[in-house]
Length: 200
Image (cartoon, rainbow, N blue to C red; front, side, top):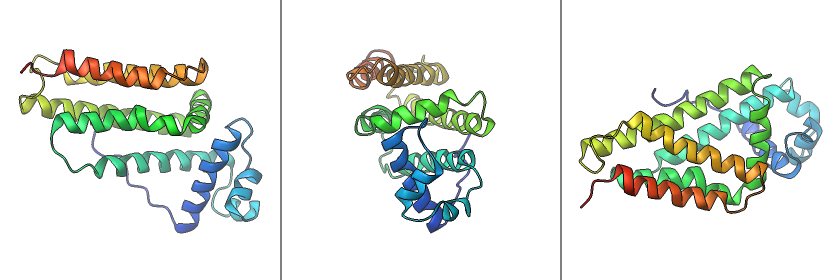
């Protein structure tokens, strides 16, 4: 898999999606309404409905928007060093979330709707595939450069790191474990140090 489709948004759509971001952080998925999004947007509900017919359609676009922001952030990393790229990627997946816990709760609520909302399921699957692809690619590159152990299966290693990430996100939300993300980041680093990196 390469990069996900680069979906562009009009200025008005970006404003609505930023308003959705704010409304989700304040109210969560369960209490999110077009009216509350419109209030954050500073315009009428009709102005929101002009671009998105339903809340579900808007939230599907919001998931596209979040993935696009993640992709853009990853592409801004200029280093080609596998160690540094993997470190920065894991920071994006775990450390950066510490400042967005309320959004993490809302996203997990949306994920729980994926079995019933095909558009949500498609976006979450796309996001998961892309993150796995990024992890797999940087690990494979590290193996080629002799930085990571050539006995490592990049697909398996990417899956192991994703399990750490997903477990921490779930514990943070479901069990209100304030230390889960930090613990997961340390665990991921221990995995990289002991399993992936070639001993000096």
